[in-house]
Length: 83
Image: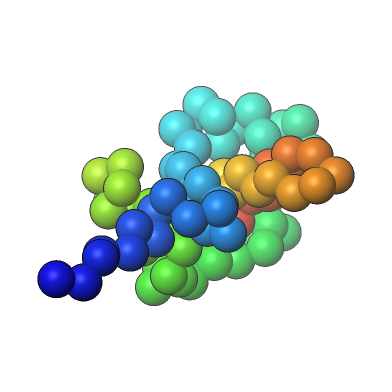
């Protein structure tokens, strides 16, 4: 029997989590920007798909996704709008 790979726990797959409406408003206000100015992420992005299964959330166009990355220099949050 083959061992199953758990991609959702792999260190190279960063956490992808949707923001609530309140968090979206705070983020856009904090950076004085709009959703149109944020980088985009495709709905079929593999990292996003893996995290959707892991955390049981649905993605819709226009949602802001927080991507939490860790590396040897620290931890960082990135934000993308689902297109």
